[in-house]
Amino acid sequence: MRCRALVLCVAAAALLRSLMAQGAGGVAEPDGFWLGDVNAPVPATIHGGTLLHVADLQALLKKAKAVVVDASNAPQKPASLAPGAPWMPLPHRVLPGALWLPGAGLGIIPPAVEDFYRSRLGLATAGNTDTPLVVYCHERCWLSWNAAKRAIGYGYRRVYWFSDGIEAWTAAGQPTVIAEPQTASEPSALGAAQAPNARQLPRLAVLDIELSGDLGGPDLVSPHAVRLRTESDRLRQDLARTGLYQVLDTLAAKDTIDRLNSQQAYLHDCNGCDLEVGRQLHADLVLVAWVNRVSGLILTLTYEIHDVKTSEITARKSFDFRGDNDNAWNHAIDYAVRDLRVSANADKD
Image 1 (cartoon, rainbow, N blue to C red):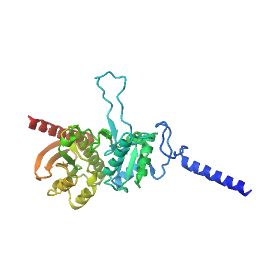
Image 2: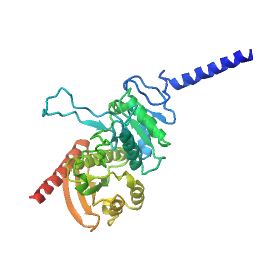
Image 3: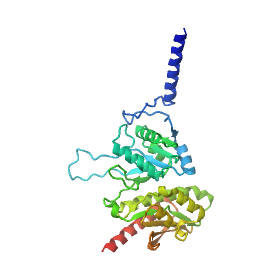
Image 4: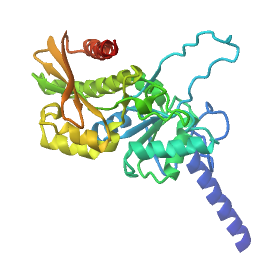
């Protein structure tokens, strides 16, 4: 009788563990990484991490500086495409500031890809395993589950799995930016296209855009914060695509930037304190940019590029634009990047 009772208890415990593992979604977590169809139904849990939905992610990003990883696969050129035929995949949109690291979410990945993923997380978090780490891809996508599980295995203690994916984020009206994939074969410093001779290009640290002047009152604090973050990421991405610079990831200098922000009203007007960030990142140049808001209709975007070694201003330009909205800010960023490209080409001539 005792033996039979023991068997029943063990069976009941196993059943309970299975039900708990399945969570509300009815899908159990695998013991290791998922090796099946990456678009199959996913569990509602991740052992060692936290599942997030859109509202949870919004709250997290407002209160903490998190590293965000998009584990989506990169598009592959169709094998049926004729040699030399143009191939233009659709732009890939990510959460602002997200690192697009395809391959990190496969069930089995080559050692080079795993080494790159681990080192890329280490760079983005400055080696701090307590940094909040958000991983996502698409809705019903095992790639993000695997990538999050892998990060937990690396020792990261605050891993968040955003299982709703980019579709839910955009459906909620949240901002996105276009990104390029970072891969083991193309280890760029930022999630943007870098030129093949990136090591020979000037190393540029782009600080976040700042807002000065008439800030418009408390109702605009949150919209401005989102816009500044989105446009700062867009500026970095667009500058990287010009092929003029090796655009650096500033996350490695996060503590320094936070300290300077606590001591200074603006990093673009702090008597050269931005150069401290440049030195920490081993940058050749630092770009600071700010928008002076005269009113909700009249604004000015200004950028300056500072030489880290000489402290000299190597470039400066201002652009007036009309309208405190996303489209107007986007146009101003476009003009600034275009001006830098034109100036660089003129210098070559």
